[in-house]
Amino acid sequence: MKFFVDTADTKAIRELNELGMVDGVTTNPSLIAKSGRDIREVTKEICEMIPGPVSAETVALDAEGMVAEGRELAKIADNIAIKVPLTWDGLKACKVLSGEGRMVNVTLCFSANQALLAAKAGATFISPFIGRLDDINLDGMQLIADIRQIYDNYGFQTQILAASIRSANHMSEAAKIGADVATAPPNVIKAMASHPLTDKGLEGFLKDWAATGQKIL
Ligand code: G3P
Image 1 (cartoon, rainbow, N blue to C red):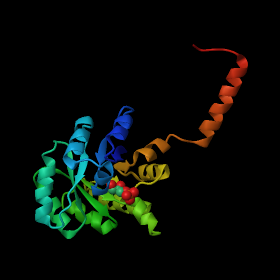
Image 2 (cartoon, protein in one colour):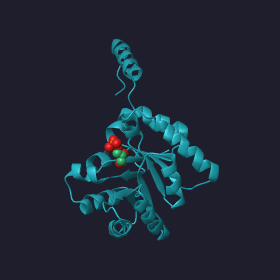
Image 3 (cartoon, protein in one colour):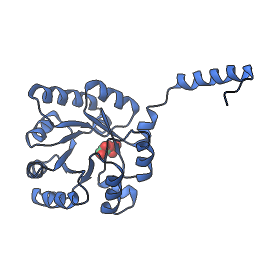
């Protein structure tokens, strides 16, 4: 499973990238707002750091506007994936932009039917939002499984990009189902390294080692 980082915080992206944990980056209008930076400036900096796909989201509501904004965002770098919402107009924009050979990430997906339409429209990535479904007591992970089954039934090449990931558990569950990509905030990727038994075991080893009076260096 590829790891994308769901942030526009360049410091956090750099830190994870040094460990080889970053295959791509996803941003959205809320994350750009949180960064406090200009969309072109921050997205360009991310694209120069990460060779993989970097999603930048359109904000127009009509297909024509999304296509125009998508073409503009694609000028930032060759590795831009244009993000459009899963609306009827978003699907139209996806068809046009993917037809031009551009990477398109169709976002705000909350149903298997929406994912089926995005694949038909030529999406490079479909972004089902796990956490936001869980928030309203629905099963976000079941949606990932349903889309995996549908795409495999027909050999759709659209990559499942599990999004709205809120916990380390979401990462392993998405990987077990076979999501192609998971995009997670930096703190969730870091949390994947934590286990209480690792901490407890380390404490015990260090205590026993101290009792030997030995040194390695
Ligand atoms: O990038 C879209 C998605 O990952 C948002 O996550 O936590 O705001 O639902 P969240």
